[in-house]
Image 1: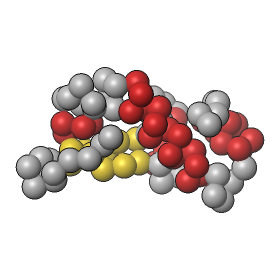
Image 2: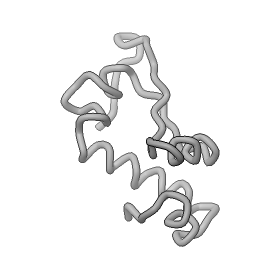
Image 3: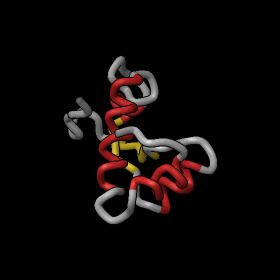
Length: 84
């Protein structure tokens, strides 16, 4: 999915899995960010900002991580809906 050769793509972006205010701030607060090379962040057919499937896959992974220490109800209250 979001594999990349970071030597080939040395510029890394921090992607907030849930973006748009206030969700971006909440992504930051709960550690729901990932490092992506520019190609997989914005400039490729697989990039999360242009590929809904990959975007939602990251959201599911982030929700699963969140639910290791919080409830699904808390997730929905904070991020608006469940992706699982």
